[in-house]
Length: 291
Image (cartoon, rainbow, N blue to C red; front, side):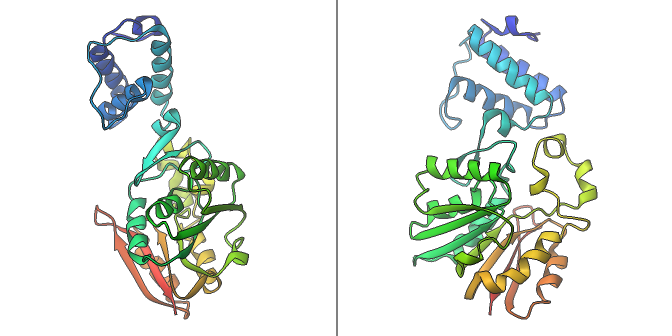
């Protein structure tokens, strides 16, 4: 079995791939074959959507050392996104790091609904808790007449978001500011407010996979004793952030639909309050309109 760095060098890619897959599987990685392929794609700088690598190709010493380091980090349950330093979201390749939440596929449901809301007219978008900038940048990429502001409490997260905007050539339409939920009031009103706030119940965090609880920023995860702290803070602000007739769209936890609906119904400036499910049929997106 190929286990240490010297034995990787000169090994055929077909054998290497099987060995990496076995090691990841033994470490408890559910999608070990897919992740092994991603590692080798990154190692050889190939597109995952392109032709697969020649199974008879072999590793040189530098590649062997690099792959061993990648494999060891993943065996320690460091997220693959951190190891690769990038992750795909919507149609974008985004820089990610330990300072931001790795974008999830379920968040693409929020983007879908936001795009249905945005028409061809120019629009001004606010993304609260922007992290890597994933949601805002996906919307800007699809809607050339839009501009947006991303807010985050973490300066390190904002550095990632700004780098992503620059890499995607969207920095001329995206502005990022550091601060709390209310820090963009001077930029109001907005045509659309989006957010994927922290919504995990504090006591649940320790039960999550190691990739999440050990490596992702707690600021982006911890929603308080019942997971609803962010929504309690955000909902009153929509009276000031949104134009009349404008909409907010928030991601929520799969079991939080009824609770956030109850919170929203306590604000008489909101109407058209609704929930949308993700592809698994779970409540995932919460919307309402400023009267």
